[in-house]
Length: 243
Image 1 (cartoon, rainbow, N blue to C red):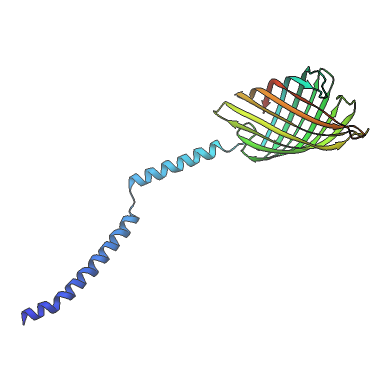
Image 2: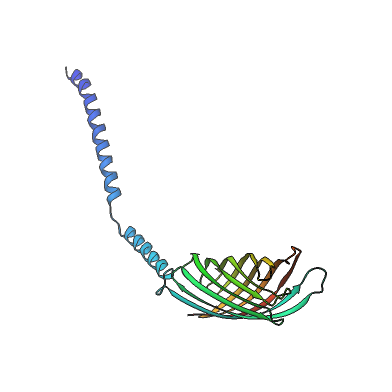
């Protein structure tokens, strides 16, 4: 009799033990997940501190930025059509003002052959929180050119993309590509071309000293449709002030 009761009770005991063990394990897992520890609190506090530091470094106290620069370049000019190359010294300056990611920029240049270039553009900063920092910038504007080999005056629209990349906190690389769209002068000359530059810079607070290599190619057609052109390339440098 006792033996029979034992065999009947054995499955019930096993089921109870299994249910109890499952319930206990589930509660222990829940307690483990909800348990608060000093180590976790310190880890979370450190993460919050790093987030605050990142926000501080990538935020600016004012949305307004201004810049002013001067430069000098020595360029080799190839007028094409088998003519000899010449060397010209180019001097110029630029100004800029940004409110948030939108900015206006203007520049003026004149070389030793009295060739003059002026430009003005509207700019959009796609990446980066400030101009004196790593950024990518798009620009669209107008450029005027006078005193070239044709003796004519041109006014053309252009699109540009420029970038600064800081390799350290004070040293970096810069570059710009500008596409001059086709335009017609008052004397029916047509002009299109491109201009690019690449350089290095070092910052001393608000002052930047930079070196630059430039390449320019212009395609010109006279009123009869006869093509000609000229190219310029060379090196130079200058300074920029940010405030």
